[in-house]
Image (cartoon, rainbow, N blue to C red; front, side):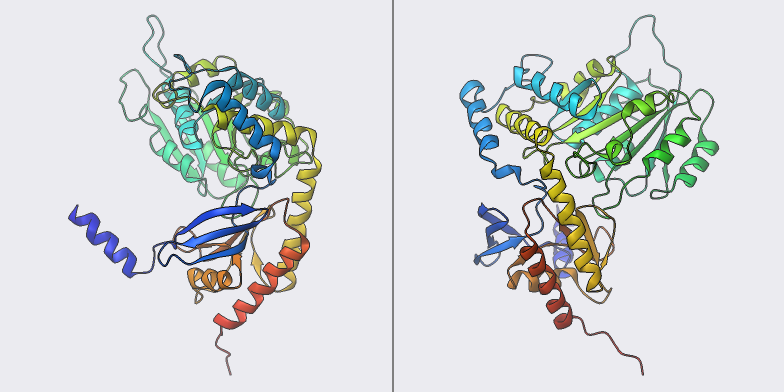
Length: 425
């Protein structure tokens, strides 16, 4: 452990450690937090929650979770494929399938396990079957800025959850430039072999840049590769983009069927921690045979199924979003308003979604800037070691114009206070 101790010591000395805050209670977008290092408590206005539609505090969502505990207990205490499947799972899968327009859905505890399960299922199938042999290699193309869950899964795609299986043909992984369809086409032309099974995977909305994958153009490229698979991670897209919050296909005026009609298999990953007031993830498909493979993947069969209260909260949330699209409209209106205010005050905001990354001058330490904002009663997320220095703001449907105005006013004040650029003669 000596190396770990020395590394962490240097890490802290370099100022790379994150500030830690503990939340005690929340009302709307105001939260009481405790600074872990000093014990100081204060109530602040938050712009760093992913509760984009404000459903974590919705009475019916909370009641659904409570009712599920009374009916099923706090845990299913088993895997879904053995004895841990409950009716709430079936209801949630059906609700997601209807919401995403893909008829078959499999649940997972989180996105990391979902994407790894997909790699296991697609690349390596399950176990050797007498009389069946797959000798086709897999080629995976991944956006260079994809979320860490995708990066980890594709990095391990050559094995089945860490175990080498001799019956599995080789898996090759190539990255393409961020949202660069021309580079995707070049990489496919360069690396795809005639017998390859091709899978392209991308965030729908990128969590650090707030931009949207060029789905229509990606479909145009993959239409040249029959039976290819296109995976969209809609963690930050569900509930946020599209007229009714159904995600990237709706945003571009498309349906998954449009990809199917062009010989492409569309897969959509939905997560519940942003728009669905819960935790967990799901993969939806129109191919019924994929679901049983996902169900017996190591990340499914090796852990418990989604707990009842978590399942019930997600189920009620998605039903609310389906019935009340005005919540999505409010989120999108808030996004446009805040972005216009930031632009009017010369802040460089990336992307176009409710994930609003604001780039800072390289001389300005995001941690220091965020601390100063916290002293003004504003809580944002500083990003300083996994991307270019920035403040990451997340807008939600509950934010008022007055709250957003307060954020921008505080940002201007702190910028003028802590950033004094050198003026050339």
